[in-house]
Length: 299
Image 1 (cartoon, rainbow, N blue to C red):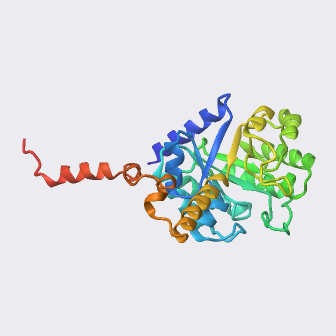
Image 2 (tube, rainbow, N blue to C red):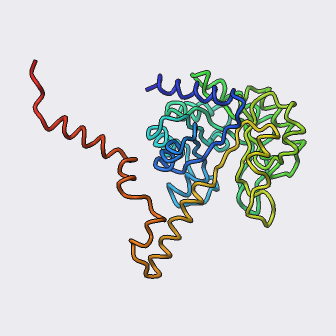
Image 3 (cartoon, rainbow, N blue to C red):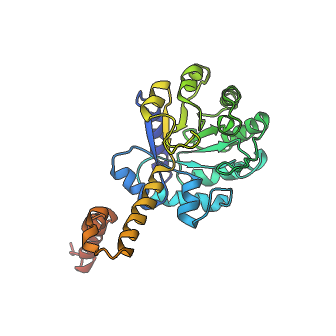
């Protein structure tokens, strides 16, 4: 299995080295990840927001343990053949123990993880602030030291632009994290114009959140994928869109059913059952059934 992991990691590195901006559609479970792959996306992602919501029906406020996050991600890895990136929160441990986090995600077949300097409270009115850049740099060093596959990506995330609204601080932190060994940086809520302005100072690929609603009072992201791409972003992550689509799609159908609509009238909103079964591999099961139902031919 580990050879397979290594091939996916190399594929992701090739993808990142290409000129095209990678649009990373974030899955929330194994099925949605298969749909991402089927739609032709070349990689997927599992974030703690989607994992907490889909796996546990809980908010993303630091409730998930390392093992729960790894397990949700492992299922995505096993259900797909594309590279998978994962959210390792704040690393789950301080630098001396961070090897355990890297080991767990690496053995699950993940191609890389992002570790953040955020101390919690991201989606709430009272963010807890940021870890010092020095402590965060030690976590990045520890993560790099812990990996056994050099192609496993250690991604450093700074939330300085989101939590402190300080772009200069954010860029300075990203520079320090790259110096500490980060293979890529992730800065949610870094405006496109600032990415363009500071891009050459960051000596690593840059990932941004393409569906973060960072304009107060608006439900539209601050920039289009194209604008981020033009600004020099290497990866545009969509961490919310798919679980948001699932929530809306299912809610719309439930509302229609509650209103007394017949199932047959809702077919435009529901995947055809046979098409769904094909996706799930029922055909392969039929072939195996036939193979093992007949006596083997003796030579």
